[in-house]
Each structure stands twice: as C-alpha cells, then as structure tokens.
Length: 485
Image (cartoon, rainbow, N blue to C red; front, side, top):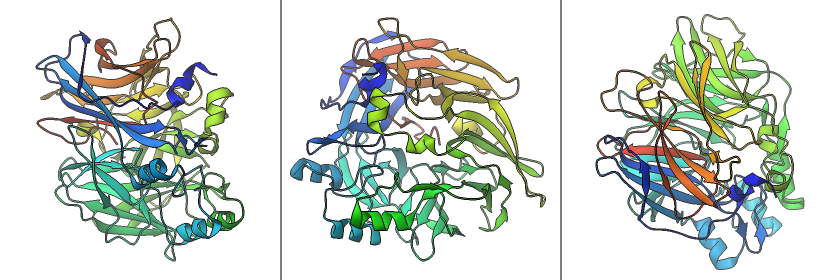
C-alpha cells in the first residue's frame, strides 16, 4: 500500500463543532468559514467505487476566528439521493463517472436517454441566491447549512436552460457579483451554453450557445473582463459507446473517453453580445484547471495547467492510485496567447514545467485581469500534492513550502486557497489556507501560510484524518464572496 493511500480511504467518523488547539498565531483579520468538498466514502454495497471522482461527498468546515484565535471543525456527508439510496439499499443508484449503477440494463439505458445524472455533489461549493450550495458536474446542487453542514433542499442549477448539466467550476464578476457558468447538452442541440446568474437569485440566463458535433470534455473555463474562453480539446466521451455499453456491459463515462482527430480550439465569447469572436487553434492538450486569463492588446492571455493527453483523466482508477505507479502524466503551467485580430494560431509558452496542479490566485483582486502570482500544488507523488509553491509569472521564480509528516516523510496538502488581507494593496498580501494529510499520525492538519513569504503562521490538528478534498472556498463573515475559481 502506498504512503498516500490513507487519503483514499473512507472516513466514517463525523465531528460537530470541535474546537481545535491552535499552534502559532492566526492573523486577527482571518475571520470566516473555510469549507472544502471532496470524496469521503469509497465503498458502497460491499464493493468499492472504481474511480476517484465517484466516492460520496464529504464536506469539511473549519470555522476560523482570528479575533478570538480559535478554529472549530465540522465534517458531514452530503445527504444526496444517491447517498441515501446507497445507505438504504446498499448499491449505486445512478451512473457515476467510473462506476456503473446497480440497475438492470433497461434502467441504465433509460437513465442515459433521460439524462438522469448523479446528485453526489462532491466537487466544490458556490453561493446561489445567498446560500451555500454543494456542486458537481451535474444539474444538481444541495443547499448546505453554513454552520452545521446539514443538507437542505436539492436545487436544479440548470432551471430554464436548454442543457442537461453544468460544470462544477464557475466564475464571479467582481463588479456585479454575477456568477458565470457553462452548461452542456447531449441532446439534439449538443454543445455548451454560457449563462450568468445574479447573486441574489437562483434563476440563470443564457448568454450564448456553442454547438459541437463531438462534445469535448470541459472541466473549467476562463473569464476576462470582456470574454468567456472555453477550451475545446480533442478529448471527450463517446455518446454512442455510452448508450450501447449501458445495455451490454455498463460502459462508464470514463471508459467511453476517446481521442478525436484535429487540434484543440479556444472559443472566445463576448460576454455582452454572446457572439463567438474567435476560435483559434492549438496543438492538442488536456486541461482541468485554469489559473487566470486577461486581455493584452489584441490578444487574450490564458494561463492553465495542461497535460499531453487524456491519461490525466483516464488514469485515475482507485486501484491503480492506491497500489500501483499511477499512469498520470505530469501537468505543467502554460501561457497561451489567443489572437483576436483574425489570426488562427495560438502561441504557447511553458511557465513552469511541473509537475504541478490546482492553480489558484488572488481571485477577488485579479481574476480576469493582469496578475503576477499563481499558487500551485507540487505533484511529487503521482496526482497527489507533496508541497505548495508560489510562482512569479514576471520573474519566473518560485518560493516553495513543503510540509513534513511526523516521521519525516511526505505529507500531502490540499490546494492553496488565497484569502486577501482587508485593505491590501499588494497582490500577495494575504494568507493561504490548506489541509495537510499526515500519514504518520493518521491525522489531518489545518495550516495557515503567509502568502508573500510562504512561511507557516498557524496550524491546528483535526480530530482525525480526512480523505483528499478537491476544492475549497473561504467565506469571510463580513464579505462572503468567492475566493477561487
């Protein structure tokens, strides 16, 4: 068993509002809720989920009060219909990305035809109409109580849109507080829909429809002050293989992934008019996460972590991640320049050769605008971070922070979440929040870093370990806006 495999084990214990011992000093201005989402239970009905994106969602809440110098911890499972069905019946209700449902071929086929997606909301959280909502890559979100993490109403995030599902990653406009997202349709009008939603409502409005004959897999996108940028890479699911497999052998979403002929293309959409103003092409690549994008004269700069091929998604089966040498290619931070003057070729420059993932920035101050610093997870153990680093896109230098387990070996941090200091004028004036898995003690540790120097300010050990989370947000008590993409 690999050292990192602890983070791929179920955590059955739930804790409510436990006060943690804080070592070091919390900045007084850090006052709010740090909530992370991701896998929590890896088994169902006597068998294991097959793929990393499948396990049931567990929320982790760290209530941080800098003025009081305290941290309180709560964790709770999202009480989705899929989770409840598994508890009651001991099986899988709907198709998960890499695990087929425990249903008859007829039911599996019907679920695909009618677009019945999982409601296991395990990717992250957003604020919809002033409420916390757990989300994933499906139509569904779950309203979450911000103090207890109890699951409330299940809501349809696609209401009124001609789509089947939405992405788990959204953007927030810092001037209007509108959030922007992408929906996707596998129906007759197959493609992606750009939509926006005012901060005080649940009702989205369609801005643009981008048709595709072969729909590409898109995990996230970029937004500038004027444009939405959708990366259409030559990788995605084969709907015919999915439908046929549902009747024959329960082919999953991941098993249906295919490489298509042709280049990658960036689709640039005007946020005001909904017009596609450019579709320049690039050499093939695969991408999960974008760092930032901004306009620079007659070009758009897009910074993202990319991979050479789709092994970045097809190589995440849990058996391989736990016991083998994961067949996951290294990610590297790349800068694309997208022309807006009619040229059709994107230029590409490597900023950091990696392996890195989970890029985050000072989102409130610089998303969609020129920026200097990006914080990355350093991936020295396959797809698992062993450190965090601050990368300067101007000087091309880095400052690293590497956690050490109690036995001197590797420890595994979550992605860095940047929280700006109120009134700050410098881009890196703030802190980074992360949760580190220590396999030596079988505990996880909440850590606060100085975002300028990458030095530790404070830490608090949790009552137990938690599986690796995917994404987190910090909601300030006075200004609970989004802190990252």
